[in-house]
Length: 256
Image: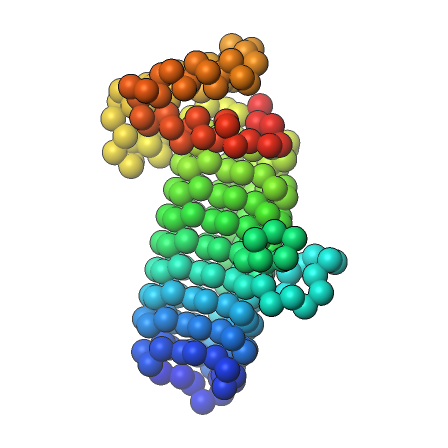
């Protein structure tokens, strides 16, 4: 299962059924769980933990030093969940001690070619990152988010669950759950209604989310007043809770 030209550190822990292709290099303190396939010419440095049934394509670089001038060889880590697809030339960095000390990727993500996920990012489950998506440091991306090709996210931004970023999008503010944004800088264009239909949200739930969007972006209300109004609605419309949490947790302001 391991090609004879691969170089595997004695300090790495590799499950018996992991496939490792030609000329791949696995460094110290790398753990790879069963069912994962690592193609040729991949470099994985540690500390890095990779879960089950991932597929890492050729020329990816995982778990190397964060691109942060403050980094001073602290033992930070990269944690990758299960069933992720990581395509060619992707770069995923470890964390820094200035944050939580780790970069974390969830499960069932589709990460296309040339994607960069910088230090201390947290990515949820079932996201799609099209080619050349770039996450700066400390970015948080919720479940089911779709990032269009060449989209870029500024450091410390938060992207809520089910959000959609258009191609070439430049995000420098937080994007609430369910929201579609596009442009440079990115501005809100509506909700990701088509994505919600595909994920079996009912017509009533989608109407409720659209109403919360209008209250937030179309009525000129103060943030505190918006939060108060949507909090009341969420008592009987629980689908609004991810949107409400996005508003409450925003520190950089919203992409309006």
